[in-house]
Image (tube, rainbow, N blue to C red; front, side, top):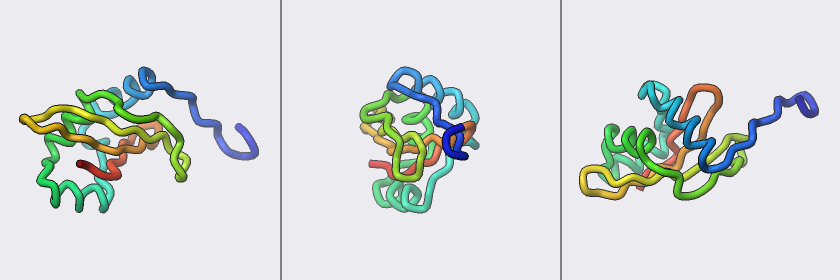
Length: 102
């Protein structure tokens, strides 16, 4: 604990990917924020495509701690012939927040 706050674990691309895949085993742990929901609708990216990107994709950018104190990455995966990217924040211990998709 540092200054009354719990210290975040340190992640690199390999360790964050392991954690993301663990959390994504239950698709109920993947939460689309309102912006992510709006963008996925606009861009015709489906929930199964988002889930596949997160559970089977690779880390394209990050990890870094965002302004909300959560680890953030951009995941990428080719799904149904399309390359899908999801910007996600990992809300430990058990939620993945989808910020946007493209």
